[in-house]
Length: 282
Image (cartoon, rainbow, N blue to C red; front, top):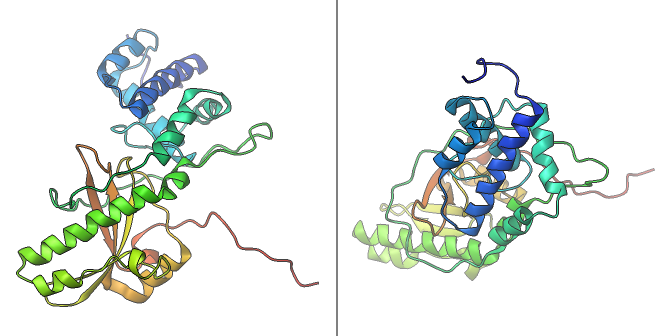
């Protein structure tokens, strides 16, 4: 029978669960089919835990991977309340010359092709994302590779997402009977430069300007987005005319997007991770 509810997981149980998770993750990053149910059933032969307990542990693993800057398994929503031992075991995978790091790097840098407008779905509600602290790097490890930052720097993916939004905005205005406004939709990050604080200039049917910043990922809606100080500042200046479109699972069968409207200082939880420095006065 399963272990008593609430009992602590042993090192052996955690290791077996993390091993199973990373095997699934490698298959997912390669684009190969697999069954989460089959993996869980096999794991239960080794780990004396209930289905719900194993599922929650998988979500904990997702949270640690996401906090490390990686891409967790789609379908295991990151959940906090993570054991310290779990953080250490998951982090140990980043020490290994294993294929998961190469696969994440490939996933982050994979070239994206332009596609049609993201008009097959309506925006979803912004998801609730639980914050999890990343493990502290050891002296030997030095640092963890931020694959999410690498994906943010993938210009082909960013451009493909922006083009999809441009097409969607033009289509929406044409459907609303506003062809002149549709003609005025502008891909400003390409036509004027990438320093204005937004990517696409569009319009409400009544003519009010909409300033759209596009953030695109191939991962799920639970992955944090990365914004610049300039984008945050502009969102505050533009107020409710600013819209951040977060496109997720780009190019996949379950592609979607959500929108944050208004100042990102108010609509998002922001964390500063880098500083600009110069010598202090003496």
